[in-house]
Structures are given as structure tokens and as C-alpha cells.
Image (cartoon, rainbow over all chains, first blue to last red; front, side, top):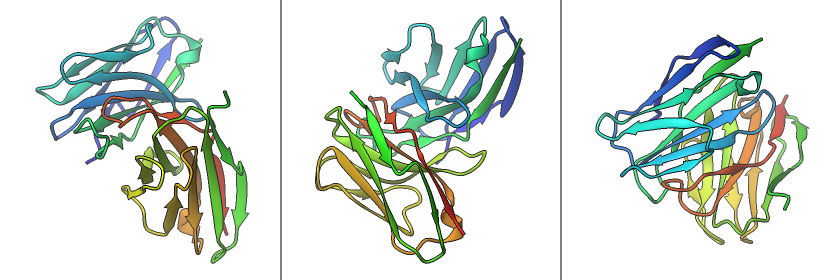
Length: 111
Length: 114
């Protein structure tokens, strides 16, 4: 089942902060975050695993609440290059048989 | 390393025609995936493979077939194209299952079916 993302879209000025949320109705093993710029392929940002392990870019911050099946991506001091669509992806197991992407959150950073 | 490459980058088909999209990766990854992305939408999994010689259905497999004869290649076939298959197709690979491994995406193939 597809995870829910909020907000659907957000507009920021350079230097402002944003939080993007991802939630699922089922138990999760991991949450992924990807960013896609217009006309380009998605690029991996971070994985958060059950048990607290994280893998990803040092400048990206995210949290994973296993009990609530929720994850949040924190974008601080936003830059123009942060603009794009952010997708979360969720998996209920370690085997990758149930991975599904969310609908995306469009982020626009203005000068 | 080229990473994940896709051929072709653009294609226009007429309804009923067939074609094959090629995905190649040089990272020795076990898992490979085919997604489609419609305008303003997220990515939906068509088929995936957990290793050479294996394939499995994803969320939207109807109208597509796949083959993984070599570890580095994953082919997506459309036997009889329909306008509803107009989309951008992305291939991805990962070293292990998506439970704990990131996916690396190719640049995409933009397919239009008229």
C-alpha cells in the first residue's frame, strides 16, 4: 500500500527550513528518501532502518518512528539546489518484496 | 563506471507496435527494477529481478514482459503498445533488497504511444 506524504507541495525562500512527512498504514522495516529534479532521474538521499540504523548523505537529516510507521525529512537552511520532488519509499521487510514509493512532495526554493 | 544506462532515451510508437527497452548496469548489482512515472505522479513498479534468470511482477505488470538473461542487463518489452503506456520508464539497480539498500536509477526513457 502506497505511503502518504505531506505536504503535497511547499514553497520556501533560501535559508528557510522545511519538513516533509511520510506515513504508512502498515509496519515498516525501512524508509527511503529520494530527490528528483525536473526531467532527471531520482537520486538516493537516505535510508532509515528499523532499529535505528541510517545510511545516506551527511547533510541530510531524517527521523523514523517505527511505532507510528512515520518518517520525516528535515531540510534546514534551504538552498536553491534543494528544489525538486521528494519521494519516500517504504518496505515492510528486509527482502525488498514490498517496496513502494509515495506520491511525492514538490519543493520549490526561491531566491 | 557508467552506472545504470538505458536505451533508447526517446521513442514514439504507434498503437499495436512492439518494442524492447534495454537497461544495463556495471555495478555488479543483484537486484534490478523497471518503473514507470506518469506526469506529476510517483514511480510505480512494473517488474523486478532479484538475480540473473529471475523475474517477478510488481504493482503494474500488465502489458509488459521482462527478461534477465545476464546479470548486468534487464530488458522490458511491450508486445502491443497502447496509449495508456505513454510514460517515462526508469530502470534501477541495487546491491541487495530494497529493505536495506539504496537504488541507483538510470536516466529514463520517454515513450509516447500514438
